[in-house]
Every structure is written in structure tokens, then in C-alpha cells.
View 1 (cartoon, helix red, strand yellow):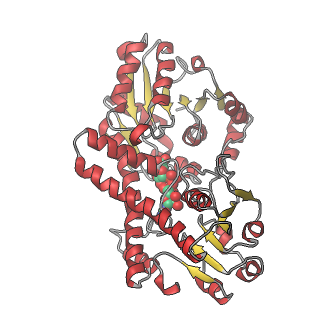
View 2: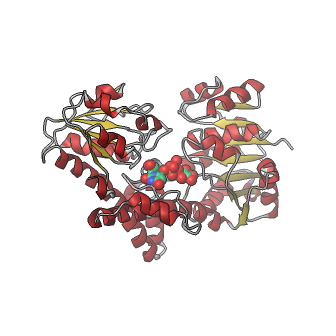
Length: 438
Ligand code: UGA
């Protein structure tokens, strides 16, 4: 059955969700306070680099099944369900900043004249949904007729469309049968394709999302700690990850050692979880997360210090090439990018840092130089740093690049280059956790 769906917030999450809902056959209106973004989306274009998103936007804005507006009154009594897809960035002390969610429900509530289901997709501290429900009920003419449910999103940037259309699992956190049935109707297409679904209470749904991100972060920090161990003992962390990953209980994914995790989700979500656990007196979880964070931060410093060592102990006035600026390949997103932390660190110590990324444009605040080709980045470099594993970097010709650099030294911060090809071309290859190639 075709439903009328409102999606509030149209950044990564909301734009992909709105387009996905239209693809599932619903009529969708996306709402955002950013008029420029609304205009771009209405023209069938995407304001972000996300594989597969633009074709969906084009198709469904053209068919009339999907449109965007800045006016909440267009969705208020029109939508059968209102999805909240607002950002929850890091606030003071790492707690989640809920101001965007609060502002959205404050705008929506007075416009809701009849019973409505408001479904959260954002990542929030446990307890937020019930708070939002109270806030909505207090300010809406429909009062107790307003219900909140939680349906967290697990999409990965660079795979947002794929994850929206074919999710690994669906989580429906509800406190009424009616809300559950409505969610089942909305997701009838993935449900007929046998997508696993977890039906639960709202607190569990909120926690599932942060637990998933905390577990992924933990896997990464664990393997990075093992990389340090390999470094100290002379082992190879990549082979170690392969071997333990064959155990189905462990799994190979998210065991890629290197510069660690960044982006707009993992770091801020685990920081918010640590704060929430502390508020609830669950100190063991806070302490656990703090060590995951410490290992992650340590990787960035370790790598930057390695670069300084390789440059002879001082980078002042020396040219350093950085390959990669996005927090991971396949996206132009540089939020909390490990590559940029390393570049910043070296720039702060006087290095002349040249950065190349196939997609990401650097925020203005950075003092280093962004260039448009790998060759420009490496020309005259004392050390080359491979910090975001774009597939094209694996195709680089070490022989040809060797002609451009001042010293043939490359630090592979993502352990993804074919070390032997570089070694054969006379390069020194440095990889944390693969002491054999050092
Ligand atoms: C993450 C989760 O993977 C999604 O499931 C979740 O929905 C999303 O956050 C969210 O909360 O919205 P994303 O931020 O797109 O998705 O990024 P990931 O693919 O998880 O990568 C995060 C970071 O970990 C990247 O910097 C990546 O380079 C790093 N990483 C990943 C490693 O260092 N090693 C690995 O083995 C895997």
C-alpha cells in the first residue's frame, strides 16, 4: 500500500531515506530548513557525493513521488508517518547535541491536528524518544494522539542507497501494536524479501544503534592495539586479521588496522554513549569506550610521529604529501577525518603539507595546500603518506612517482598498498603492524 511519508532532515541519512521510501512506492515529502539544499534536491540532484543517490532522486522527483520543501505545514496533517532524520552532533563533553531534533519537533508539534506517528531514525542517547514524545504531546493540538517510535538507521556513507534499499536488518522500537503495524506496512518491500526484523521496546531500539557502532569501533581499536603488538614483536597484523577473521564468530570485517576510525558517526556516537553510560552510573561501559577512543586517537599521533621520524626527526619546512582527505574512501566527507588530523599535526610542526583526494574538498580552516593530482601532491615530497584507501591509490605506479619525490619513503596508513611493488621500485615502505616490511 502506498503511504504518505514525511522525512524531516535531508542530509546523508534523510536524503537517502526519502529517496528509498519513494523507491519502496510511497509518496514522500522531505523537509529541510536549508532552502538551497531543498532546491538542489528538487532538481533531482544530490548535495552530497553518494553512490546511486542521484539516479533515485532524479527518477522520483520526475515521477512526482518525491519532493522537498522548507515548509513543515505541507507534511503536518498530510503524512501518515513523520520520520526524524536530523543530525545529532557532538555537544559539550561529547554528549549528543539534540538541538536539531528538538527544533524539528517544536516546529512540527503545533501543526499536528490529528493523531500521528513520529518515527526517529537519528542516533540518540537512550531515553530521547520518550522525551520527544512528551514534548510533541505537550505542544500538539492532537495531544496524546501523537506517538513516537524508533527505527534506527544503519546505513554506511558511500553505501547509503544500497543499505537503505537492502538493509541487513530492520529494528522497530514501538510501544503500540498500531505503530508496529504501520512500520511493517512502510517496510513491506524489504520485509517480503526476508530482511531480519527485530521488534522491541523503544529503549532497546535506541541502544541497538549505539551498540552496533560501539562494537564496530571496538573491533577497529582491538586490531589497532594488536597492530602495536605486532610492531613490538615483529609480527604481521594483516595476516593475523585474516587468520582470526576466518573464525565465523569473529569475522574479518572491520579488522583493517591502520589509522583508525573517523567520520560523522562512530567517534561522536561512542562519545555520546560513554557520557550516557556515566549519567546512568554504568561506569564499566564508559571506561571501556574511553579505551577504545584512546587507542583510536593514538593511531593518528603514532602515524604523524612516524612521518616526522622518517623525515629525519623534524618536518619544519619539509614537503609532505598526503594521499586522501575523506574519512574513508567512496565519500567526500571529511568530518573527523583521521587523514586530516595527521595533516594538521604535521602542518602545526611546520611541514609544507600537500593533500590530494579524489572527492573531498578541504574545509577552509586548514593551512595546508590542496592539489588536484597525485603528481602535484608528491612532487618534491620527503615523505608520502597514504591515509585514505581510495582504490585508485592501489593502481599508482611507484616507479613513475619515484621520479617526482625528494625521497622514496611511503607510510601506508591503511595497510592497503602492495608493499612489494613499492619495495621493488626502491621505496621504503612503512606500515604500522607489519614490522617485516619496515
Ligand atoms: C558507520 C556504521 O558503519 C554504519 O553502520 C552506521 O549506520 C553509521 O556509522 C551511522 O551511524 O550513521 P560510516 O560512518 O559511514 O558508518 O563509516 P564506516 O564504514 O563504519 O567507517 C568508519 C571509519 O572506520 C572509517 O574512518 C574507516 O576508515 C574506519 N575503518 C573501518 C577502519 O579503520 N578499519 C576497518 O576495518 C573498518
